[in-house]
Length: 86
Image 1 (cartoon, rainbow, N blue to C red):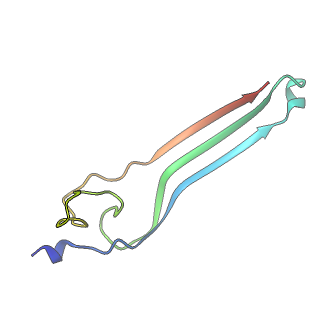
Image 2 (cartoon, one colour; image 1 turned 30 degrees about the horizontal axis):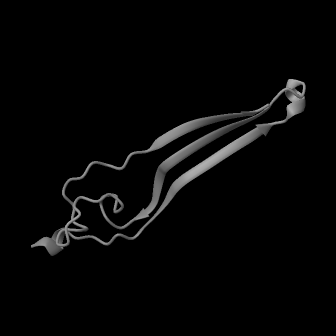
């Protein structure tokens, strides 16, 4: 019976965070203004009613949406940004 493997998609998560710091021009003798940033996606789930990530889709058909088919976990990513204005 498919209803035993159907879960609610209620979830609350920290989807994306971005933190940056701008180093003023006077630090580099008015040559450049540099901005350094850190970014992260899919950092953590605060609340999840299903035993898997509800935003991952196992199928695009009309009859099996929302079913758990032993899907891979969602990916977490981190990044560093560097921006220079001359």
